[in-house]
Image (cartoon, rainbow, N blue to C red; front, side, top):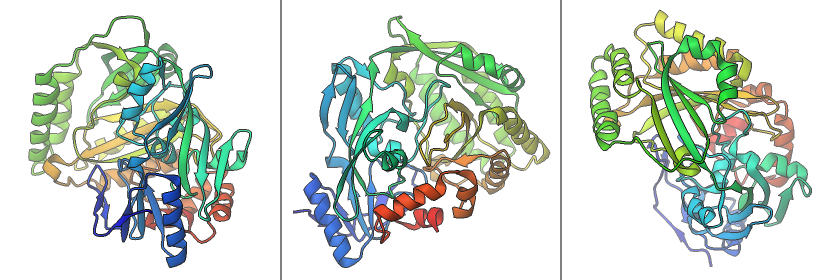
Length: 440
């Protein structure tokens, strides 16, 4: 029998949203989830399924029933011939990596954080970088979905194909994802090389950078021309690291947090902090080699507010130059470093921000030193205006102010997703405040 708890507070990792669900469940089997859904139907309650709680937006919040998938976290099957792994939806990627290592397998692409569940990663459209690579959901070859009425649907390219096209970026709105089958690749090592450059140089030679490195990204330091270029590529070199506790933590974390806190009283300091830290930490060439998942993931040390929109790849230069010009024209608007710029291949997943187009993601950040909020609304608004103008689509897990009207313009397949959602969940059991803004 599914046992629920009252009075549990749910909070996301960034501490930007929290909620008190009426009942909180941690099921260990499909049967227990079915019982929760039956109870919800009976009492006319809403249900929200959560995983790692890493999304900075309120996409995971509810005042109804909350199902936390943390205890449904097993590897169910490894097919070494097809190089595929089937897992329960609640497994954290951090726990999946060592299991794949044992079988000589790896995921071909990963986001920056691995304390996230398999179902959450795909449901929110998580991505990394590399023009040969799609968002992480493109690695899914099959999944099983438990719908509001208790039916289990097996979805893949060959069965329930339309639901599959929707469910790979599901927003938690279609039902409960139970299992996921992921396409893997043979285990590999990556060499990461980072070196300094300028915004002008990178934007003028974007195509050659994109061709030069399989997983190319760059970090721009606002209020300056400074850029750190990061190449990540397959290697046979032995593991090595230029990590150093003093520079990475004492300076890159503790000193930075202290200076950002002081800048909340003296906002003009931010432009100097950005330049100082570039000079201190990013001004030389660095190399690291390790297993792929160790290079892809890194620590998000600070609590932070972020926005991350996908724009058509050919608009990269125009958008970034406009953002830079806006900051120059409004000296009172401050922007923390870095603006992280990544690139992703187009796909055919209905609500993927990369639907039918190769994309560039522009991620902006405002840290919260010692939990203190830094004024960001002018920066946020200017950024969103530029992103909308060039045809951007917001990352589903990050903060944004878009509503159904916006999404209808952004996503050619939006009506198709809505029709599938309404068919699978006619009473809106899986809706919450976030999804109501999206669909109504």
